[in-house]
Image 1 (cartoon, rainbow, N blue to C red):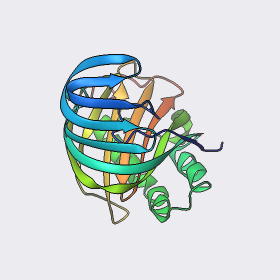
Image 2 (image 1 turned 135 degrees about the vertical axis):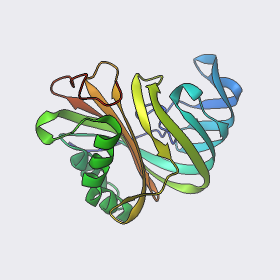
Image 3 (image 1 turned 90 degrees about the vertical axis):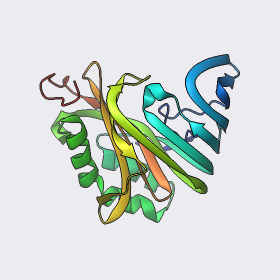
Length: 212
């Protein structure tokens, strides 16, 4: 399946989100109105722009950032994570995408360690989400301890950690949905990243998922 360019969402707070939002302390302003959240940051996100500094929503993990970047985001679907990345590679000839594709087995090993779910091809119904290609500057750090976030996933991982995968620095966090029917994976490498949901053919067994 082909990749389709969409609006961006650098923080990965929603799969492929693109709505323009302004953040002022605990307030999030958009065309839908104003929402108060347990966060404290300032900045703007939407379209191709992400500029933010401060603490993110603590319901999604313990994380902080100071980032300013321009990016493209592509919505992609496939039978595997590798196929999702290759769909985007067909649209954007970015060398780091090749590194990501080579690193897929190592990323899946990180997912197994974080979630207890072995995402073999015969267990996957579909993979869909967003792939980001960006330029900019800044730093971010986060700790995800497995509590249920605002999307229903128990994310585990360390953002900003330089994990070894394919001899590259890769950040990976992953979590099982509370209904045990899907796994969310977010990963970043150099100037590319992805935020995908892996839908399972059959719900994972509760005793299998290390987070539940």
